Image (cartoon, rainbow, N blue to C red; front, side):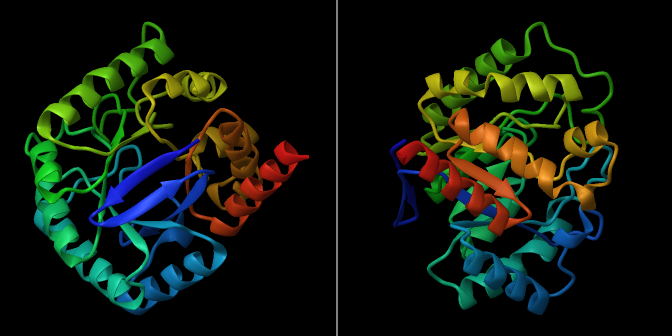
Length: 277
């Protein structure tokens, strides 16, 4: 594993897996403990995550849980941009990512201090997104999603999920390159238009995506695949998250996107110690 990603002049070198902490400025994200209701709480959560070992903080203003109501770009920017600005001011050396599928939000977030764009739609929900990211000269996290957040869990189906998602990334990476985006990170989109069986198949065969030669981001943290399989709640799903994150690391994950930074960092450290023994 050896990637060098240019985050608007900050070079992020990934020689071993790193952790991205999730900060939600939404009142309705599926895991209540990830929500921040004001600027002070957001800066404190950022401080806690940085201290716990997060390399990147991913800040979002729109819930993308299944069935979530979409609030629009202007309202999303009002939520997320001041938070990004405050965290960037407090921690100017930390890499901040904006979690959005709106080019408008991406542009204002980067102006406020973000240096990475995380788009659940791979540029398919806003046709201006890829050109905007290229203009902003930021890395781009390209995720796979079938449908939209409102419809994605309505009978998702694939001919062969691993092949279908791989084909999607080949096409979207090509579109990113053509638009002028230099650094692309891929995310198979666990839980986004996929059944529990689909998610486990993707996890089991995650190493197949290394053929893309892009950093692989994995977002399994406290998702329904875990808590529904174990018949528990999202609040009880930390142990299950750590188990699946460990499997993902063994399959080549470069970035773990998580609510619980300390636990993810510990999984990385222990796996590294085992591999070096």
